[in-house]
Image (cartoon, rainbow, N blue to C red; front, side, top):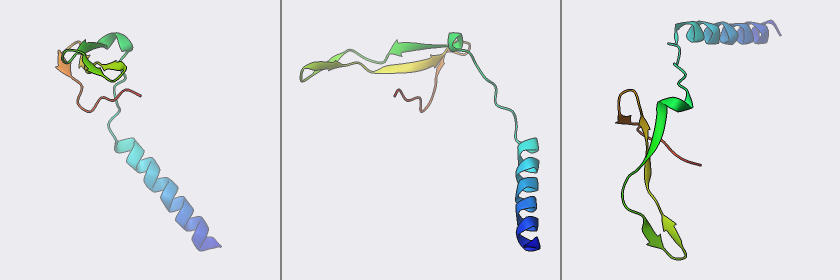
Length: 69
C-alpha cells in the first residue's frame, strides 16, 4: 500500500512541476480573428461549398490548422 501512495504522490508532484515550467498560453478574444473567403463558392449537389480561412487580425496571418465544427 505504501508503494501505491508513493507512486501517486510522485505522479502528482511530476505533474505539478511540469505545469510550473510550461509557458502560459495567451488567450485571445474573438475580436482578434476574422473569417475570409478562401476561394469562390462551388456548387455541390443541392448545396454550395464555401471555403474559408481564419485570420489573426493583429498580424494578418492565417491560423494554421483551424477547423470548424
